[in-house]
Length: 128
Image 1: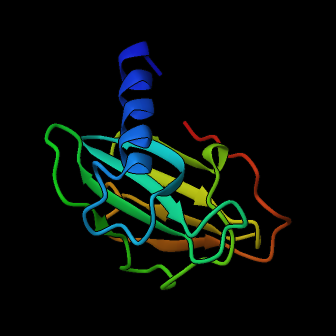
Image 2: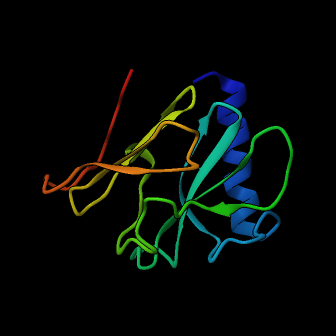
Image 3: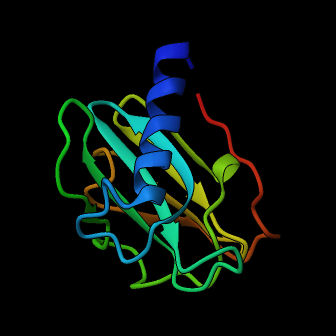
């Protein structure tokens, strides 16, 4: 990841935590951010213990309201979706859960499908 994207992602996490970019987010506690094509994806939860976690998306090139990713995903996850377990490449993204599930999107987080289940807890993913 280039340094400009890294700075953008850190800035976005700080703005979410401070409440500046909170529109439609159920919480300001953020654990993971990824750039997927022209879309930014962010995970939020109710806090460090991770209850009520979800993935949100919005356009990368302009600030705006986040949209909860719910097509093909459970309403809530019981644990945080951590930084190493949310990755993106072009318009594809994938994330893993501590419950051993992997979810895949091929349209920048608009729709999702469960790719794998019944695995050990997922702490880190990579795809190319």
